[in-house]
Image: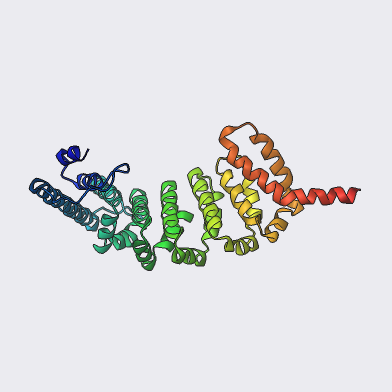
Amino acid sequence: MSEDRQNRRYPQNLQGVLQMAVDAGPAAEEAPAPVQPMSEERQTWLREALSQVCKGQMEEVEQIKQCLTVLRKENLGDQDENGEEMRDGDDEDERESAFEMLSDLCENLDNARDLMVLGGLELCVSQYLCHAQSGLRWRAADLVACCAQNMPQIQDHLLSIGTLPKLLQLTDSDPDPTVRVKALYAVSCLVREQEAGLQAFLALDGFSVLMRGMQSENEKLQTKSAFLLLNLLTSHPEQKEPLVSMGMVQQLVSVLRSPHSHFHEHVLGALCCLVEDFPKGVTECQIPALALEELLRQRAKDLQGKEESQEELEFCERLRKICFSGQQSEDLGMDR
């Protein structure tokens, strides 16, 4: 086995370096082997492989710089009679391509950090989240999301330059449905598991933005808004009190009365979060005018036997059990 490893040839890239490191360690079934000096051939290979890795990283930094050069160009497009920017097809295509390349490159966390250091995120936020062309607005929001994912340093930077208010405004009122969805995706990347982001979100009345997203006619926006609400309630149960006080229960029930959609699963999940271990939430659900018990009973009946709706059915039954099983017992006692 060790002889096979010694003679194995690896590609001269980062993958090869990692594979070599794995193979160099003892296998699970083997006792640790005595340390042996690295052969001259292996040393040469390792030096060349590391050189290729560094060269590749430098090439990607150069690509980032080239994309930023494109995005920093003055817009030479004409204006229409109302003073609004007219579309210059070639120019917009070039900028869109630059954004798409940056999004691909920034899947690598080191590249995302390099983009931040080179001023690319400030450019994106200050000039492109509010750009006249929707194709550039949504690509800018998508790049923000790509860079912010699981990167606290970048999240803090984006929050410090006022990114969140712009994203919430796009989510709430942009005329292009794709921009709204991508902006909400970026919002999610800035507030989930990010305390500073959550506090900024609360200060900007972000939950109301999510509610309006669920009430929109954009199905993707409805789904993502409901999912983010459920996620935030699951992670931050302390938000039950302010949300119930602002009438979230009544608004969620109103959403459930709209034509059935798969995102109702997340709405029911959010309602479950608002009532679990929180009597005030239960009381709100029991308001007779909401007729929630009958709605849940009918919904459960409609979902029976539908394998793809099992999680929604479980939320439905859990909500009925928490809010109405005790109430039914009290009613029976009064009848007797």
